Image (cartoon, rainbow, N blue to C red; front, side):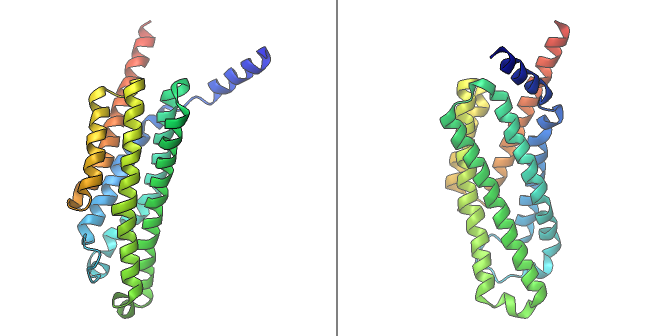
Length: 226
């Protein structure tokens, strides 16, 4: 038993979370903000629009789609940082909902990006046929539903779960955890009425990441002084 315990401790020391991982949430926030900004700037929010953005705003949309995979990887690192901060305090129930909502959020984001990418490829193949076809409107509506319904809901669940964990474990300041509840409610209710409400999610992740990084640096300085 002692040998097994020593081996686990050695493995834990060797697999210590790298300091660079603390910046993952910041990278994710910046990239996702850029994606949302480019998409909202180029693609009209109305899912029934005729597709004029395929000629005028395709460059911005293509650039945004290329940023999505990098944002997804950074988000996985951010989730890993949160779990590392919790350590032994992690509750199985909340951990399951927390991790499940994070993975569903990420898969929905990737799927929506893939649908938009498919629309662009189909437009290059047959520009005149696609815009007036049922296929275009189906893909446009599918991408809209993924982002404005399912992604928003998963983001809200992720924020509520993370905020609940933060309140009980003091993972973040109390005001930030309570703010997570408010933003989650705003996302669920306001996603149908406010086009830019999605920006609130990466901004909240940015604040959480900055708090974690600040707390990490503060503890490091304290340990060095001792």
